[in-house]
Amino acid sequence: MLKIESYLKQQIDATLQKLSFPHVTYQFDRPRLEAHGDISINVAMILAKSLKQNPREIANQIVTNLELKPETVEKVEIAGPGFINFFLSPEVLRTEIREILKQKEEYGKFFLSPSPKALVEFVSANPTGPLTVGHGRQAVLGDTIANILEWNGFTVTREYYFNNAGRQMRVLADSVRLRYLELLGETIEFPEDYYQGEYIKDIARKILETHGDSLKDSTDLTIFKETAEQEIFEDIKATLASLNIVFDSFVNELDLYEKGEVDFVIETFKSKNLAYEKDGALWFKTTEFGLEQDRVIVKSTGEPTYRLPDIAYHKYKFDRGFDLMVDIFGADHIATYPDVLAGLKALGYDTERVKVLIHQFVTLFEGKEKVKMSTRKATFITLDELVQEVGKDATRWFFLMRGMKTHLNFDLQLAKTQSDENPVYYNQYAHARICSILRNASDKGISLQDNPSLNLLKHPAEFQLMKKLMEFPRIVEKCRNEFEPQPLTQYLSEVSTAFHKFYTECRVISEEEPELTQARLKLCLATKQVLANGFTILGISAPEKM
RNA sequence: GCUCCCUUAGCUCAACGGAUAGAGCAGCGGCCUUCUAAGCCGUUGGUUGGAGGUUCGAAUCCUCCAGGGAGCGCCA
Image (cartoon, rainbow, N blue to C red):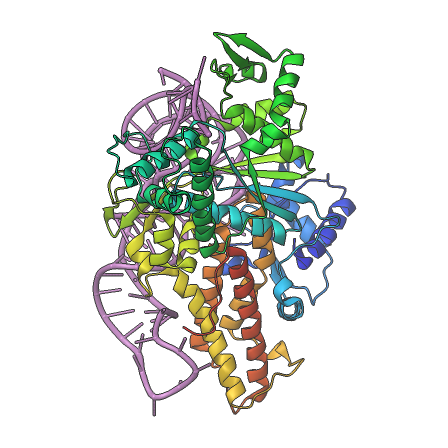
């Protein structure tokens, strides 16, 4: 909440008390229409219910009894069904500009003491092949949500979990082995459900280089598996790095077995009578936790299903003392997380601390044409190729500019065009333009004064820009509350619009008006700061030139 | 058959239960001897998929129906 809002809330609450109105929670809103002021509250409408009075009449009573300092609010109006609208005094805006310039790259950041610990788990793709475009959306979402949490006072760990103990990895290893034998001149029949990609052959080649034909008759898959895991992970990490994503921690399934976490889960379930044997398999009584059916956690082959290590993994998260654990999954995993949560409840953990985010899939378009994705055909586009073609900034922006619940149509053509059609450049251009003005000022030998009179800023475009800038902290907060970066992309576009309009209507550098020039340069600096801070959260660059 | 998500302007999408449902793109018409035209201004465009309900107020919440997506494994 903004300073001005907490001031208003304080005064309003006092007025409510004075009038002996009941204590209610009401909302601070930012009206869409300029005629409705800068801040509006709905308290009168809320009170109308319990007081059984006309909301406009209640609003009237509140307003006549409300005392506000003239340097904060210029005008208060009652409008519509009973909104109370506040028109901020320009001094509030000027104060906020000074605040932005003072706090610089920390403007919009919230600090909590002690800082709560958050774990954000995302991507978590098994190392069986290159990341897909779908992983890309998750990677960018996860990293940005981690940034948002950091800006809201959390200490964040970015974690990647992968399964390296199951069937998938065995198939991968055997795929490599077959390609290896192929390189040695053997004719082999390569199964259809094995990993087809060229990268398998590359790994096989690598093994051939280091081991020669010594593994020709080996039935042990260890070397194939370990090399494949290592090589593919190198690629995955490189792809993520090209998107500015670096993980703090990797956790794998095998470690959970070695640490005894998995056995602990089984033993606990058994001792609480939440597991039973049937058809040679071990079942977890998920129905005890309101789910439709019980689930197998150990197959009749003696091998666990993915569910069991997943539960153990989440237990391991809790044991490290995180206050908040965010899981990000694609829509295909929507049915699996309730089992994990049930498992955690069974172990006695508070699942309120786990926040599961589900994002919808990405469909690639080339203009109007849907790009068909097929692993077998060569039409498959990897995340790596996408980033190389489109660039880091556009890739990140496109993944973030839509709510994660909507199916994302990613238009490659649009993302690649470096023109006005592309929303990324619209925003970066605003930043570059400001830098250009600042360069110009310095070329003309204009040095920035510390405290120019911001009172000279009174053009409508200036007020609009100032008002837009001061919304930034609230947007950062909103993104955190909704676990959704999208509002920030929209907000930044609005800042850019306000700036471009200001740029068109107000000449910044003017020889005749040095005072005004100083004030406007400050406004430019503040805008540059807010844009840059927003870009930092989104993980995109703030170009000085374009 | 069951569960979850979606359906808003020609297209892609916004809109904590609030005021006259907004942007971008596409379309049409304007603006560069002045700090970056990757920009700005104007204009066209809507029964918020349909039908009921809840209330001071519904795109938003509830029920039903239609269409699209994803799931419903001893795969992950």
